[in-house]
Image 1 (cartoon, rainbow, N blue to C red):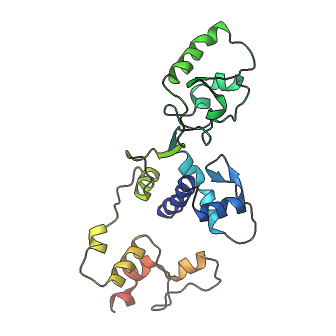
Image 2 (image 1 turned 120 degrees about the vertical axis):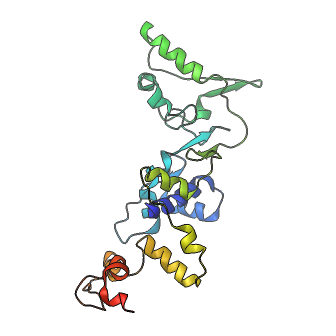
Length: 246
């Protein structure tokens, strides 16, 4: 889960750092979808780093909302910007009737002489039993308007609205009771190389033979010290009798 959270950090940066050179390069290579992410990477050759990042996009998109400014980056019905869920989920019957389901917020806002109003088009007049739903919908839009500044992306897992890897990791592992031994590893009086090895071992990322096999290398996995069992970080640190004598 930590790996996924770290990859998702780049998805978040892609959504908020649109003026950065690297961002423009990525958009130019893969194209853009929904205003906040690239199109799905379908290159069948190799395992590109952006392909891995784009694969986890749903973990980020389901956890952010928008603060509407000019409304050019926010889809009126499909993005979360007014309330706790997108309008298509809150008012599915109205979404089924709307003419432009992919409209941006700016598209449905009309401004004249400094005054503005919402201008939505539906495929037919409303029936009597649908009026209450329309009233609730209009009430939710009360006080909302389009401004001159740019739209902002907010992370819903933190109070400040900013993305932190820790916040996503906790969201992905809500029932986990295992905490990272921060003080033991990073604040102990040992050489930094030892601390770094401890960090790798804790997350199962030390470059043992089983990890090398996972990266696609064809080799025989045998513990070098005993030649009896496969080599893994758990085996070396916990179970290998020969390692304990060193």
